[in-house]
Image (cartoon, rainbow, N blue to C red; front, side, top):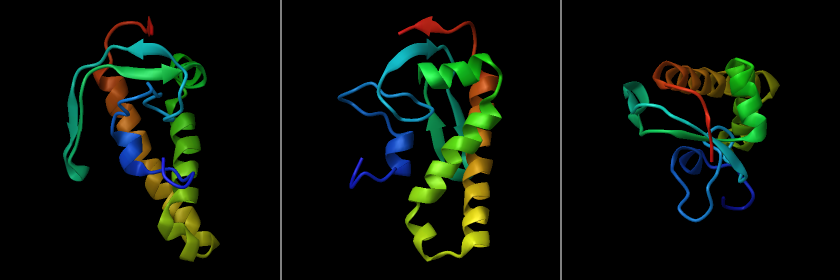
Length: 121
């Protein structure tokens, strides 16, 4: 990550050096969730194969609380979005909701394309 900021491109793109959680992008992967490839055409996003998860994100997944995780992650995205610096409070909330919509969409596609139980990483 650059300048300590969350970068959406890094969020979506695999990091080559250190395995990171595909949900929160933090190191410390403990689990792998088997999944098939899928595409979200509106944003030209192609997601390939299994997903890695840290312990905290795996807890959300196993508790069927991915919408809650999407809300938390989208809040981080909204705070670190360069556009947020010039927005008033209600517009920052709208930006958060925009990120939430797409994170929820991504996680729901993950759920739809997930198959089998998690596997220790």
